[in-house]
Length: 241
Length: 241
DNA sequence: CCTTTTATCTTTACATCGTAAAGATGAGAT
DNA sequence: ATCTCATCTTTACGATGTAAAGATAAAAGG
Image (cartoon, rainbow over all chains, first blue to last red; front, side, top):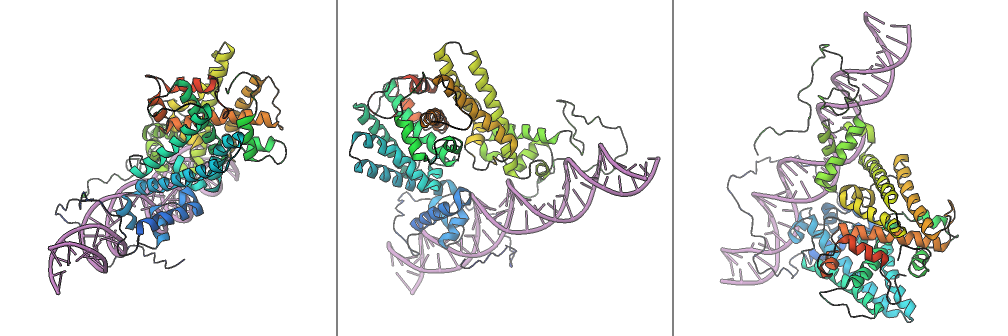
């Protein structure tokens, strides 16, 4: 759509751009680093993130390329570079957006729950529901290897997500979860809850649970299976536990 | 820069202009001998799979490209096409290899266990141990989107893996797990075990558990955390369960 | 034995991607 | 108004997946 000026670069001038002058890097960020204000074309940074999210949910993770995002935003293919550095930068910032959406969804779900049981199930259900509603975003957050957690925005958003989980577990155990120290049982409880819901989500998104769902009583949904997973009595020894 | 022997990927030095008879090549797969690859490789398909595994464990998932595999095997970059079709084909067959290794490791681990508790823990431990020992293979098996489960080899190997898990759960529950029908509780038990260990493994490989491990008593290993996850008593309401 | 066929491997070609670097543009500062 | 420089565009390059055509050797058929 739009203008598809796919000029295969045969160039007309053909002047060799290879300069022998050193031309060192153009000083990436002059220490001030307040590039928040939108300049002449509006807020391209934000536009690119929204375009990226659109491309991701439309074309999947494999379709999410720097050039596709630039195309979607209607700018040249090299425009994102200045705002995100490279693909890792864009993916990391997009993942941060995802984590914020994710955290908001979980918080909202916890608020609307009334009974203790509903409160306990609200969080994992919201977790899976977000992943199902935004599989691309979830993939970026948890499947991509190319994320840079040293980026403050991503680190912060992901940390908040983890804190919310730890906090929920603490509530359920009626314990205070310390900021910098955990007992083995506390750590195990957190890891168990996280592993279970994360693993379930990944398997579900990958279609790996179809095998199970197909063998269950007619019409059993993934949500129902999750609920049973979290509440059904454990028969036998282990696991789990 | 300049022209310093660009080393394009023509692996073979020059072309043998004409076969001057020389000697008839044994060419029947020297079984390990370094090959002066003849035009027709003995068993290129197998060689490519082994090359792929080497590349994967050496350079990670992002380094695993069709061309890199061909380079590693010493053939032209288009050679794999005839044996695997496309990249999906190669990845799928390699994942099948991984699943077979994986199944063998699990079976072996279960055999060596004696006590019921050890038997119950052997499987999840072997699961995580395989992933830690072969992170690349595990990534291919469970992280890649680009797998074609309609390929018989992959489908079979993955199916066997699932069957082994279901069987183990059935043992623990002292129930017969039917081939084509599951109760909700049975399905929940299988999904719980699989989700837990798979989620744990993914989080571990992604370094997402460092946060927890660092807060645990000095020197607590991932294996110890896993064990606690599977055996520690559950305090509080849920999850899980 | 010689020719033909066929499966296998190589070359060549092309679109796309990420990224680097130089050129163009326009907003804000001097 | 001119200058400066962040922003955006153009151009270029190497790498990748894939398709198609060419080359080669093993097998098949006379």
